[in-house]
Length: 289
Image 1: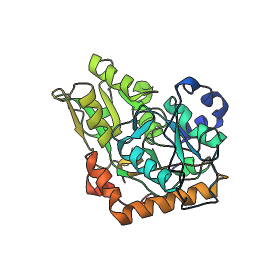
Image 2 (image 1 turned 30 degrees about the vertical axis):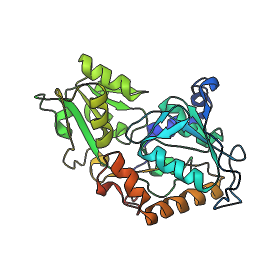
Image 3 (image 1 turned 60 degrees about the vertical axis):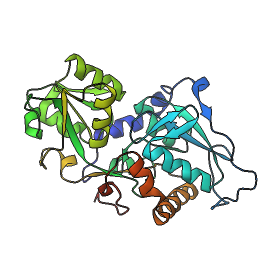
Image 4 (image 1 turned 120 degrees about the vertical axis):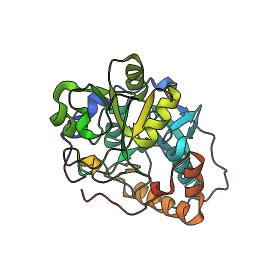
């Protein structure tokens, strides 16, 4: 987006503290090794651990999830295909949302996933891959609440995930009425319990979360009209696979992998599997930073 996000910058500065918030290392899991006869698309590829792609991970379906030692979700399967092209075993390092980008910045993880948008603030601390998925900001609120547009948020308690693009803008709009969460599940639990009145998420995330929380009959998901007060409504966000600023070889491998998956048609098949619309596939950057 056009304006840097101070909340994200603060998180990046606190990278040492945030990394320690990662899950217990005993919870880390490694996928089965690739075929010994595999030939990597980029033999000079550098990773934290040779032969392994270490992925900082938090659940954010339908973008990112896991089944044991296997990445799932649209971004999870796309990243897994890229790892296969490079003959890399995936190692999952689970942690809180706030620890993801600092893990990559500090060199603990090679990349992360789960709907991380391409922004100017993020580009200062990690290298941003080419766009993966294009998504729209949405408001999840109780049916009949009348909270459907950005201005409707005034006077209500609203939840957002830590590090979201819109946090600073929404703070200016509603002050202390915005509550920040480490996990998506916690925010929807609070919505279900009536402790907050609305949640700001990407549209696919909101639709999946209300389904997981059993709120389909009670909560609506609306994409608000563009509003100058919240820059994230003026153009859709684009997700990416961030990498360490010093790792140009991994950035190239990811970008080439994304292009290959799009060319083969496999990219669209993965999108369709997770219910993402065709509009979510836009390989050209939309943000002007």
